[in-house]
Structures are given as C-alpha cells and as structure tokens.
Length: 127
Image (cartoon, rainbow, N blue to C red):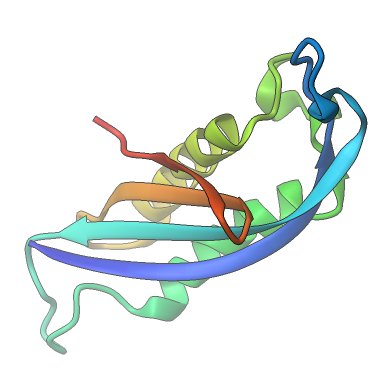
C-alpha cells in the first residue's frame, strides 16, 4: 500500500453554538488541510499518482468552495455546525468523488486533517 499526502490552506469564518464557550462568537481560522490518498498499484512511471492531479482535486474543493467563506451559510453543511470535524469529512467526500471522476487509478482518500490552529487538528479517517 502506498500513501501520498498533499497540503493546502484556506481562510474561513464560522460560529459554533457551544453553550458558554467563546466559539459562539463569529470568528475565523486560517485552516491548514492535509489530504492523504492510498492505492496499491504504481503506474508505468513508478508513481501512485501525479501530485499535481491530487492537488487540483483538493484545491477545487478548498479554494472554490471553502476559502474566504462564512461556513455556516454553505449548503455543504446542511444547517449543521461547520466544525473542524465536519470540514474534514466534507473535504474527504468531495475529493474522493473528484478523484474517482478524473483519475484512472483506484485512489482512496485515507485521511483528512483539518488544522484550525498550529496545535489543534481534527482528523477524519473514512471507513
């Protein structure tokens, strides 16, 4: 099994209803996002996939859908709180769909890490 990881970032704001917690106030983060994909077979060039293809899929989700947005207002979260955990799930699902559409390999998103600060991260590992 091989695993590739790409990183990107986005700026976004959210507001979380956590009784008595400062996150109830509208606030933002400069999220760092790490997306890992796995696969079993290397192609004829000896690589699992081109990093550029994976980066394009991740950026299509992050840059076009999440960057500089008030996340609470996005349809992506269907009225649920846009926590770091849910952001990681959303990115994983969208990137997996894009990879399935655009790449010939059988890549699987194996984990997504959404860092809301340098010392706080939510990781989603799909089943």
